[in-house]
Amino acid sequence: MSTSGKNHTVTMTDNASGKSAEFPVMHGSAGVPVVDIRSFNKEFGLFTYDPGYTATGSCQSKITFIDGDKGILLYRGYPIEQLSEHSDYMESCYLLLYGELPTAEEKAKFSYDISHHTMVHDQITNFFRGFRRDAHPMAVMCGVVGALSAFYHDSLDIEDPWHRKVASYRLIAKMPTIAAWAYKYTIGQPFVYPRNDMGYAENFLHMCFSTPAEEYKVDPVVAKTLDLIFTLHADHEQNASASTVRLAGSTGANPYACIAAGIAALWGPSHGGANEQVLNMLEEIGTVDKVPAMVARAKDPNDSFRLFGFGHRVYKNFDPRATVIGKAAHEVLDILGVHDPLLEVAVELERIALEDEYFIQRRLYPNVDFYSGFILKAMGFPVSMFTALFAIGRTVGWIAQWNELIEDPEQKINRPRQLYIGEPSRDYVPVDKR
Ligand code: CMC
Image (cartoon, rainbow, N blue to C red):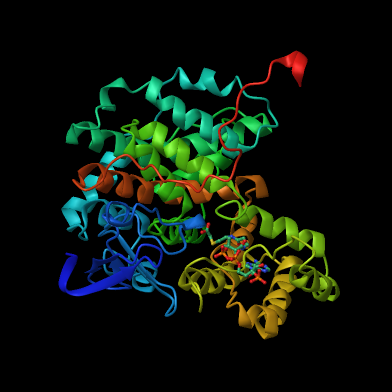
């Protein structure tokens, strides 16, 4: 889709050598065009410097589009608000993987195939037992998902489209089983096996909250809301974890190893780990009267503390996922009759921050993680499971990005350069002379 413009170029001049070179500008179907600097080093003998990749496009992609100034998020062209209202997670997964909305038959077949891959190799139950009972669920997920490559040898050939498809379905299908079991393991309850007659979110709730002694009755409102949360988290273009998956994938690593790398990147508090930190932060604030002190801390240049659930690298107006989830949080808590006093703290925090010059100037708004925790908490999930739930929803995005990378002839091993600022070459000094 992108056109490298004969018409549109950028000319750069190196003031030291006086040399000039022209670089084509590539236009996508939407969003900011990019300058193709692949010949930059050949032309000037220089590399570009962009820590955090704040100005760097790493690939061409047809999957997800974000306009951070306008608060737009599209999966394959469809606005997240429309998908949230009319679609569901299985349909969004199909859309992200295949590029088009499924027909009724395609959707039924896809859901059937996913539900028939939810069981894990029985030997994996022993793998769980190697962890301490107080292990964080994300630690367990990094380990167990990476270990899938030791169990499913028939889907490791990344050059084979069938292997890639089987691995993709397995990862989407088994992630809820692994996350639910990570939870069960920490609370000392037996693992609950998946049920093929249940929907994706419903089955996950069943595996988390049923016991052999008592079947958990899944409230349809709860299942629908969890499905919405998965849909909202399904993909977010070249975010840190998707880029990590792509980077690992660029080496030819197998899909299970790549997704384990994505889970590790997601865990950090600047990324998916923020949903856990939001609740911890609100608990620390405790009451509405203590909100101003926390806001003052977040603004203090000498304090590294940040308000979790605020700010985004790309969204500089509002996060459309936060709008949907904020509304859902209030509605679901009402329906479930849950009164969470921390919700009042959150509402006050949002109010004060949105009126504060510091946040206005830096264009810091609540992101998706700000309200999701309330819903998950009301459903009965402990705070330590929040990021694991994010990982379940995001798996399809990682997989879609990974498949796109493998099929992209322009992609090669991802290998950034550096500006070396260490010691220049020097001679080794024997230990008795130091
Ligand atoms: N609280 C207070 N100040 C903040 C915050 C915050 N949450 N976020 C950014 N700032 C300030 C930052 O200190 C800097 O100020 P100054 O210009 O005075 O130095 C300015 O805003 C720009 O920050 P930045 O670090 O350059 O922005 P970034 O694009 O590199 O970081 C972010 C984006 C999401 C990592 C950051 O906003 C943050 O740490 N937020 C809190 C963690 C969080 O909620 N993460 C979830 C992101 S959404 C879900 C996901 O993608 O996983």
